[in-house]
Image 1: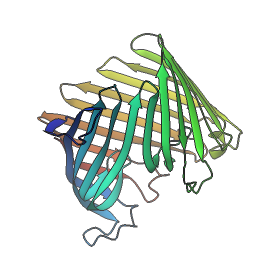
Image 2: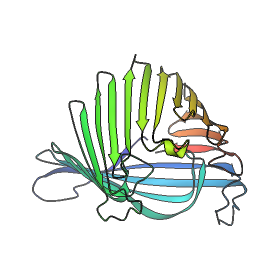
Image 3: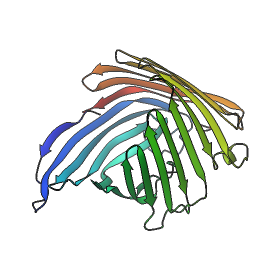
Image 4: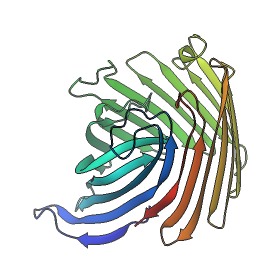
Length: 307
């Protein structure tokens, strides 16, 4: 997202503060969509069983500052208004009431970075779970460590903490993620060339969702030369994913095919966008994932704007 410096102001007038900035940015979208499965929406203009309309605006304020001794700090606040459609998940999210939403606050220095966000910090083992409150992260010479914790112990799922160790140097990357569910995820990747990457994953929790195994492993190969991108992944539960992408002169096209062996189904997603310049793009997508959309497919067509 392109960001425009809208205002610069001294937020704190006290010893040790060198500068503080407020940076504004925005995004918006409008279009039509079809979702035969979204029966939970109660909006009078959309009964959740057919074609609907979306239009929304997001305004984001990013605050940042630095002390005279080198500490940096900041946070962000966003306001959403309108009717939101999530083009990433192909889901109609309903009406936004315009209430300001707090994202996070951070303090960073030679000691690392501490982030505060009540019930908004991702579990490092499973990023679908984001009810932790605080995170500490530190990296040096290609090595990194991160810890999260649910201070108020109100996660509701029992995972009160998580940790990730990482390494990234000379074309080799590796990570180890755990939490107090006793599950472990290990990811390894190697850049064979500047365009080709191979990866290997091991997860003690993922297999149970498919075949009932105590673990799941996956092997992936990705190619990306800036114009064409191809990716393939297969796991030990015989599920696979294949994706194709094309990007040139403002045009981006993507096709992804997913096979779920346990459900005996193959789904696919089509996406496309064309950049008209100045922050305006035409976008569209189609998804027939039966596990996510029980009653049928979902599509959308509209415009995306960034400011």
